[in-house]
Image (cartoon, rainbow, N blue to C red):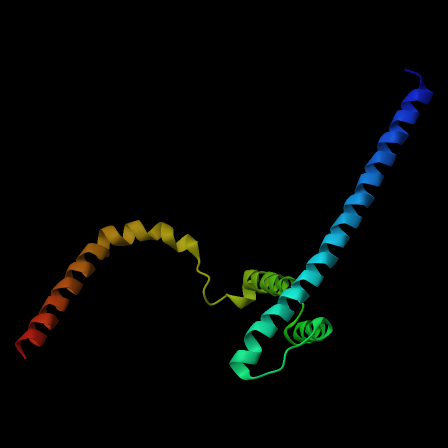
Length: 144
């Protein structure tokens, strides 16, 4: 295979890639527009089915339903709220990781190496004294 043939094959693959990408983009655009018009139609049909019977409102046509849909989207948002929530979660996580935010909760773990020594010398005695004190307190409460 010569250099010219490889170059032609490479150009064909690139052209095919871009053409399929454009066709997919147009198809997705048409699908989104079609779904929007379908949602508007469903809104109109639901309104005309429910609202006159339930609330005594008049029926609406397709374009009035479109107006209601746009108004609802303006009032209640377009569904893009997730990105702001996730960024605020990231901010909270980064703030939590800062040392000055949690300095009162941080402990010096170098003291833990003394724990075993303390427990062997004083811990068991202190625990037994605590248990006896609790038993005495519970006994007094039960009697009164």
